[in-house]
View 1 (tube, rainbow, N blue to C red):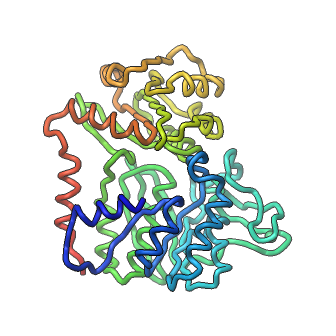
View 2 (view 1 turned 30 degrees about the horizontal axis):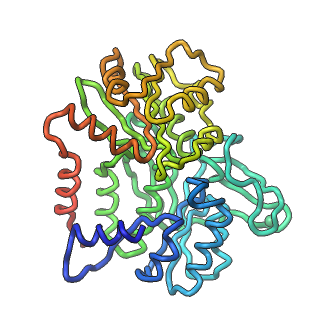
Length: 376
Ligand SMILES: [Zn+2]
């Protein structure tokens, strides 16, 4: 949102900047690009998110399309999302990235945002899916298909935690490690590396930064509490929830899960989105000792999990978040997964930080790593 961008500048005031990177959501895009006039726009994917605020993805596509029209900008596009590669019809300078077929690709995908060709509305054929509607697609009627990649990730291997993969940029092939799971993270890495290299950053520095990257603020953020590995992963839309649940099945350790569903304005006051998510992925998670539910709407989430058909014997509903947290932290497990919605992330982080020494250490660590960032 524009307010967030202003705060970002205020937090780190300089008289001039070489460049700035901003994450801008679909609802604020038009307003923000009018002022910022970006040299590059990276478009990652279109997933339904907070429908009560932003509307359907067709509207988001149209709004972004119209906002981009007057701009002199280079588009960095995810070639694997047909809704994103459809921006090629703008005929602006475009760069394409994607993730090739890998051991986590599959032939069927239960939850996708579209099955149809954005060019002629016929059904799209898929050779494989990576997640959601992201994969290798082609239209039998008009020939619409993935544009060729200039940058791509291949050879993904799970390495607990995270992945090793190869990143191909033209002739150059780099081996890269990333310490977080989820194919969506491979896509995020690919988008970030593509943008950085396009802007002329030193490739070795880029690969190095990806290897040592640490998330903060609830994007699979790690906390070490009582010898347990506590992982906090924000879930805020159907595709994201399904994909995060899938990552739980990569790891064999004894684990429990705390789902925290809030329904404040920033979470979506309408919680029916949880019924669109592939919560059935929970069936493949091994060694799961309990599933706990908290937040303002714990019973809605518990009911959604019940409808996957798994036993409700180890379901625990506790509306008080502090008590729910206490329970999962005291269970005999190695890993505690906490999946909060947006406003719940801030609440649960505060409760976690209160339990460990050195409150606020994650934010100061983040500021420290920004200070140490040397640019070529
Ligand atoms: Zn078509």
